[in-house]
Length: 366
Ligand code: F6R
Image 1 (cartoon, rainbow, N blue to C red):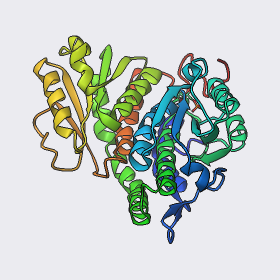
Image 2: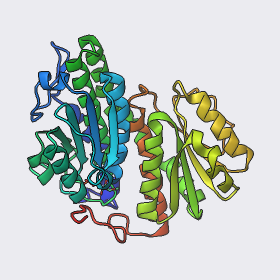
Image 3: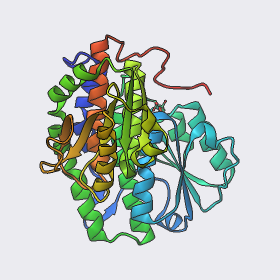
Image 4: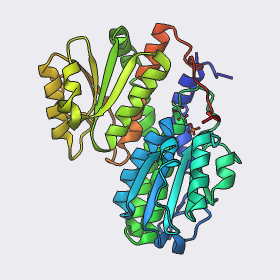
């Protein structure tokens, strides 16, 4: 059942190229340059009248939502508020009939996310969920569903569900962009082309496994880890820290790189591994300068960059290079080293990777 892998988590990490391809398949209407989502439930006219979007989720799914906010605001130019479900449901959110609430839940059974959906619906808002389990409670109660086709996720730490949620959010942002008139048919087609090229790049990214295992050996005895990123890589920093905490029990924090000097910089010494997400994009120089601040204080930098010529060779202790893709899709690729690093550290520490202490796969209590 683990298909020759030592753990479900590793199997599921390696299933991601397939899971991504399945989530994209059949969803582009080539001729019209539109996105087709089979159980979407809302008409283009309904979408064109939206003035606000809420994204609601818990845990890893919330991290996907943080990236989704970048996608939707960029491609559809609709303001997005993102909330953790247990916060949203008690804050009397300003939901109207022009609001769309997007619930993200792998299991479709998370109690707080379900309650948030009921809260939004009760206020007259429209709803759509991104879900991996067919006919789950959240899928049944939402006006529409976008299923991720990740297949069953057994490992408690979410991996393939997360990256397929990012794909689903991107497809949704493209669909919204087309219905709101902010995206041309050609541009939509081009962006789907970029998506279609991603599974192959993800396969290449998985070839970093051996290098990352070595990095895990070098850093497994650290007491704390810091993860830094900016823009759409900040949620990936949060996700990297969460993965490490959950399965290796090492304390880790994700931070926006630009916030470091406002406090966490005090933590940096030669015992602190600092994972810096620094792919080549328009804020690359800013992140490099944050990284140099870490180096100057003796922090042990593990830099994740993209492409061959990032200019970081020889400048940092450890450099991991993922393939180049568009800025929008880069979080999907940089997630992979986050997953593998946490996985290998946990294996080396001998923890129960698939079934970490105190955690449940589906949180059906508040
Ligand atoms: C982390 C993890 C959890 C879930 C969270 C929400 O690896 O799996 O943080 O993401 O409990 O679960 P779903 O997505 O099923 O609502």
